Image 1 (cartoon, rainbow, N blue to C red):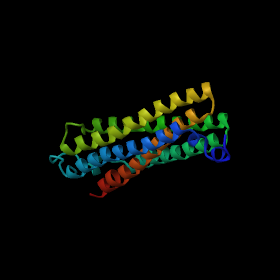
Image 2 (cartoon, helix red, strand yellow):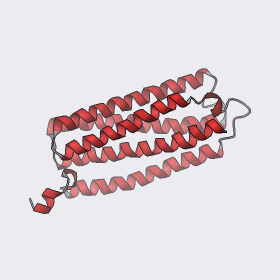
Image 3 (cartoon, rainbow, N blue to C red):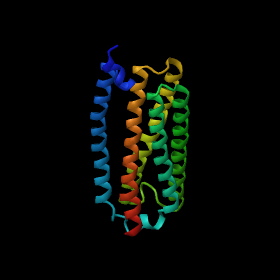
Image 4 (cartoon, rainbow, N blue to C red):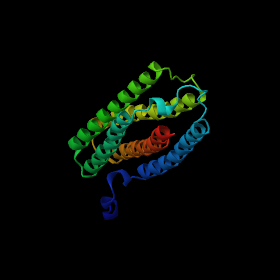
Length: 200
């Protein structure tokens, strides 16, 4: 192993790992295109409430702030997991992955609770074009978060079984990029959907 290789983070020490990370950045670009389309549809339909319930009638800032805090904190703990991974500390890596997963599950639980509350108040995906766009946008993000949780659970098992090596670390690094991407999308949702919706 060359000195240059030893100085690189573990996830970059194999050509396969570097290529996979590059390929995932391209995938992230496609995901941005998907969410850009969903945001565009939402903003086109933002006033199409059919004279019924609008976002300002139901959005709860305290709940959304808690959800935002949880998800942003999970991004921080995911970053700590990467730090411990690069330091070669498997147990601490798994510890921070576990906390990240718990926070992600907490976010999903609150989002499900939020959706049930809206449905209880009469806002469903068929109530109006606005609510259709809202549920599709938020639901797509929520499904991505759920997928990220399942993905990291599988990778945590692989880390336990195979330890820290260029293959397992590159996989987890890619999953962390995905997780941070979902946080960026949530910040856009928080700003463009909730904050804007509450002042309309």
